[in-house]
Length: 495
Image (cartoon, rainbow, N blue to C red; front, side):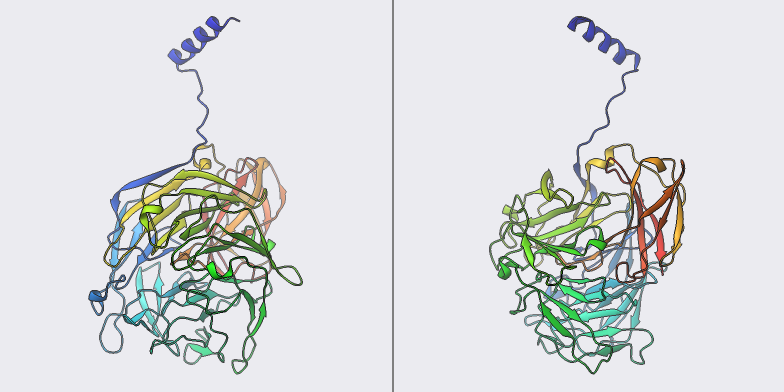
């Protein structure tokens, strides 16, 4: 067939509408045609698929002791509903600016700490639940002391661990504590630990121990990466095991870190960060299964950045966006996003976002596999309210579908997923939803659910029996095919 004949046939197919175009495999960003009504300093994906944004006084001293609305964003319907948190014992609104948060097993978001005053900052002892069903705040017993810029982590027991932050007198709170509804006063505290930094990035390990990655906010206070072991008795002090090898250990300010997928591998990556001015492209990984865990160098980011976000995708890669080459400098923040593939140990530069986002920006995974980026507050009262959504390349492909799956799971359970693509499914994954602020997210993790057997239309898989691998709570259940294309998630509760 001649070249002329080829062209003629192609033209005929186009005219007859019989030419089947190849699906696009390119990624893209989209700035939404509406804005967030408040600065989204804190963001959490609720088990309803909606997103909770809150900011308290929002880094604006003039708003202290004024009403602080939070909003629930219904992404599908493009609407926002407003809520007001309870008042403190003096009748003033509880200021959740720079609090900490993680999810309880029931799906409520535990939010602890916040702001009592500015310059110097004093931390609030308040503790609240946000109930996704009623979309209301519920006041809970206060902590033993205040926390501003704290870290909060859900344990395998379902209890909530709180660490660090500035106390109600503006001093560093060195006394970790645990919340449980079974405690008489809600909270029990341990003796003081080392001076863990503000928003210390913490990860629950399969042993029940807790790893501090070295990423934080404002400086590490001389505390290097380490593993914390919590004692049974609250009269005893947690023990600390140093983890060596972290390069540029003084550049952990506003770094990102993530438990690499799947969680069973027990590898943590620290990404970028910086000093008070300049960002680094440093990337290190530590294997926490090793007898003596040590950070080792990994391929660097293509662009140095701080104030950025790292989001686990359901194709088991890590997406990095937001941030700047210089602290809080939006003129150097228009950086293309990057994706890390743990299987190949490589970075890939992908599409560039349109909105510069630095301090007080967030990003999180949606159940459909897209990523929301929001916020940015380079200077007080300068608030970035535009919303932007990233669609990875897999969004444009033909995707597997989940026909049915259990809405509740128990540890060690064998269960069935109905899917017409069963023969082509590579992975079943549980992804814990994000609750993020200041580049810190102690919640997100991807748990592998091994496939035991399959038929033409179903998969049988088994949930881990280790509550520390997958803390109790709500998860997004994804299936991913042999081409690395994930389904839209269904929600399930593990307990």
